[in-house]
Image (cartoon, rainbow, N blue to C red; front, side, top):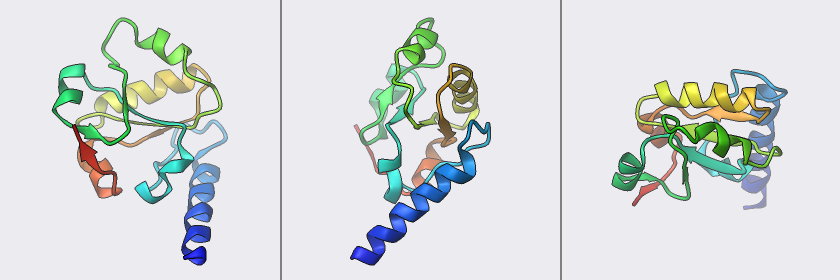
Length: 122
């Protein structure tokens, strides 16, 4: 068990080092290392979020007028993982968040997050 925990921690650190340092191409880490993220953010509409989302995700609608303010209020240490339905809005959100000085991994769409092992719920 200790060997597995060490491997997961090393994988999370490697994911951050490879994609970090302000890179615009940071890759998301598997669910097993989700502790590497300060928060997982679903950037879909509240209605989409209510229909089902990654367990523990926070909903900040990228299409809302208040998105920029919500991003500005997030703690800078991060890093953050964002996702949406198909990957288009998450890419937009990740760019906005990086421009605000945050470290962000783009998780893509729901299917991508599921492939990474993130559990869904309501």
